[in-house]
Image (cartoon, rainbow, N blue to C red):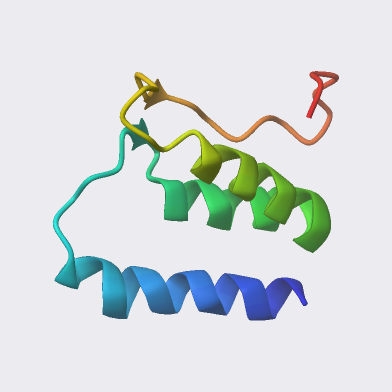
Length: 77
């Protein structure tokens, strides 16, 4: 499952994202965040982190630097 999700994100980054104007409010971008989250935390938790991050991508959120939490982080996820 993890490999499938990572390949979907890579496809998006290579084939779809270049066709749209850059609009991500965050660094790293939401797609890169999702890739790193799934790679670090696995398919289930990584997908949850990515969905949570994408839900913040709207005009009322300031954006900025928002890295993927460490695997051993005790922060509430």
